[in-house]
Image 1 (cartoon, chains in turn red, purple):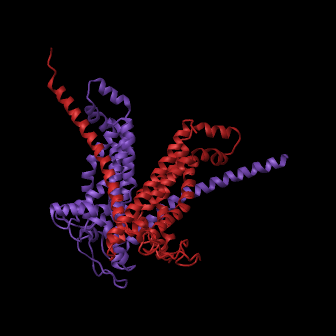
Image 2 (tube, rainbow over the protein chains, first blue to last red):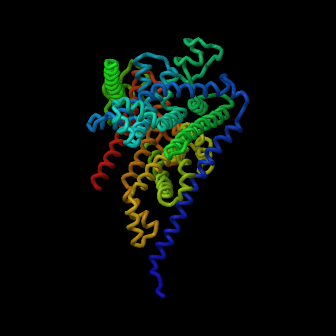
Image 3 (cartoon, rainbow over the protein chains, first blue to last red):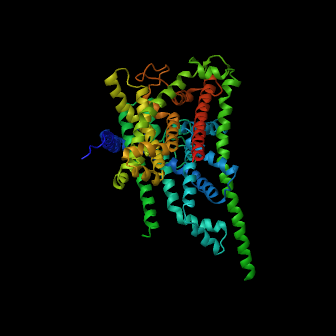
Length: 296
Length: 306
């Protein structure tokens, strides 16, 4: 029998070796994410003190409320703007310089550092328009950061619909706008919702854009429901601190004795919040796949 | 009957043109927003040169940073930001050096090697990395990587290396996702051809898949760089924020983003310090735009090559 050429053997050994390398890198990352998530949540649990769960200056619940409320306000702005702009890009935009320019703008907005967006919003609203640093101003900064994501998700969702949807509707005499609002949007609404949930998840963790815009304190009086009061929980025109800003404050400025514990606990809470939303997005988009395959 | 049909028809056309107008306005609003951000940054960032009378060389090539924080004086101090600029490039360069091999290996694993089941487990894990907020990366890095570096290499632990590792973990999912998609879009025929000639899988990956996916991989790397360059708070927690050139990877330094985030809050509007920080924000903006243009150039060149 002829001896196999040695370079063929080398090639086979290299192949096996590299396969092992790639498997270990894949395994390594899987391990890393478990260790990382486990570390954050475990440390948060170890640092737990009952007063952290109170809506006071000792706790983190005011910050949790402000985080959720700020993202909610930001979505009130970015969702309509993003969906409408996405409809324009998918359905009305012609292949011209203007469309190209919008596309580059979306890309530029989505890759701008959030610190820069925060500075822009601070300049416009606090220096030029002379507003105070408030929840509202922070929500604007976060909405600018989430508009590109919602726009591209909407555009992709509309474009991925089978052309028969549109043809059928327009063939029955519907106008283009009726086709969009009555046929196309309902057909891809879950994909758009997935995009909005993802945008919300990103908003929860935002910090750099809020550093100069929200005012760094959550002083809320939960018995005060006068919307014009600076202490009213629902007043968007009051200073606020989100969980991520609280972690930053504990690391940089705080003189609290238990600042590390507060930061650990706030981190765990924030990670759980973000992971819940990413699971929710996964669940919603999973349901679409089932629906698309004809299931219920 | 006939007239009511007519009126509903005309109201439909009204809705059509109204809807069209509204969505067009929203599309254009996105352009206006981007232009407004650019215009304000150029306006505020130019004060260092127009009002304060420094030139761009002073800002970029000098390391003397003694700007006056006083609204009434002009051009008193020095605005050399070389330490910050060097710090940004040093930390991001190190982050890329660490992240690229790992990301490419992970991408090859996901696109070429892993079974469907393995992909279904690893891919969501990669997406979870993207979802974790940057402040938390900074905080965990501060509690784990910084003490580890301190214990092994001495010093304070807050260092270029700590920042590089934290940034590498943050940008690896970006590079991996984009590179995986690029490798997956290499046509199956390319692989079949190489396998038909008797290649092993690694030979196919190295000689066929990687070269064909090259533009996509480059796009991922540029996106990762852009993300690392603009990251502020995660870096701020672990880099030491010390205004000195880093002698080696174990020394602390300052970066553009950490300088802005720690000094902007105390600066008086219109002062030399404030103007210089806005100029640094302009530098961040320009780097982000250059990255976008580079990605466009890469994908355009790839199309021409095809």
